[in-house]
Figure 1: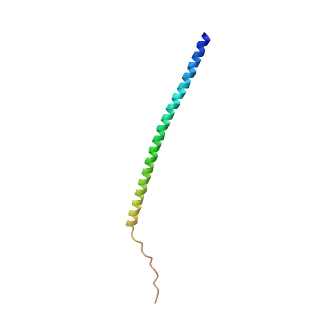
Figure 2 (figure 1 turned 135 degrees about the vertical axis):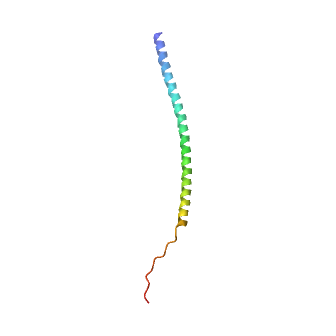
Figure 3 (figure 1 turned 180 degrees about the horizontal axis):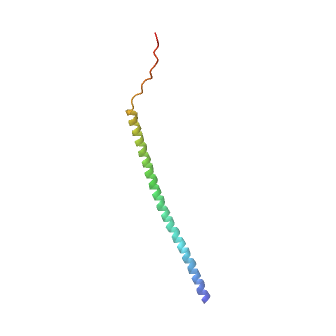
Length: 81
């Protein structure tokens, strides 16, 4: 009978260990999904920021082009008559 009790304890430990492994894998999968969602939100925000930066750069470059004075013509040599 002592051998039967020992084998039951060993089986209980093995089953408990397997249950703990399955539970930890479940938790890891849930956390991975949450991290994937956060990464998607970050990528959306960065794409919006890049679009806004492009708009700002385009507006700034237009203002600089308007603010510049027209280029002067180079002086040409006068010909003697």
